[in-house]
Length: 240
Ligand code: ADP
Image (tube, rainbow, N blue to C red; front, side):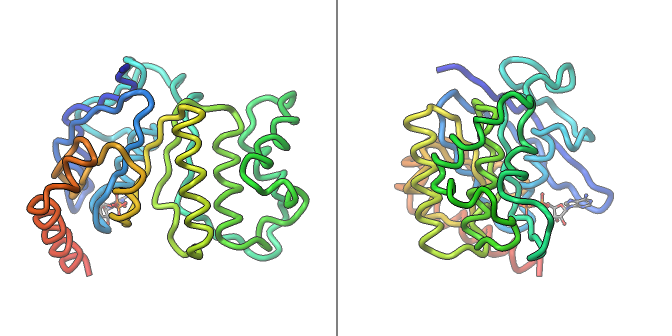
């Protein structure tokens, strides 16, 4: 399998603290990677660096074999779903408008309908984004991320504050995008059970990389899960 992401010795220092410390791992084409870690573990910092939004890092990040400092072309192959943005009820944009913002070419307008259908939100196109439930808004943002047919989908803690039924629908959408459309999924989550069910690879982050490998190798090793949970809990207490 092709290595499509290679992260080597990634270190990110903020003035007060080291958010990431010497993190190295690779992602192969078709992987479904779950990134787990407590609040403050550096997950968003990792994504910001991978997306070229944070350029103050040491080490290297390659997509498709090319260092992201050399070319931004790789971004065309990435769909990104940020942590759930909050919209005011009257925010003046419809679902169609939001998905259209993800489009690079005007001529692809017909893609919008197609993608909304895929995500079970084709009846919502003319509704204002702020009127929708959290789960529906989340699917709109996935639609926006997918409208250019990316090879890689990156999702940052996307289920926070969303009802259980929508979460299950969201998981089945992710599974299908990965298995049927062969989209490589990179997904950060607090939900260990969900990661166990969905991901085939796991990266446990807690500023350093605690574990990276097969999901089964992690979840079938009780000692490893226990060590990780304890370390995360300490980090969590420290954080609050
Ligand atoms: P996570 O997404 O896992 O919760 P983050 O990457 O958001 O972790 O944060 C990692 C650590 O870096 C936290 O302690 C956070 O407060 C700190 N941090 C994040 N962004 C900045 C920033 N722009 N400036 C300074 N510190 C930051």
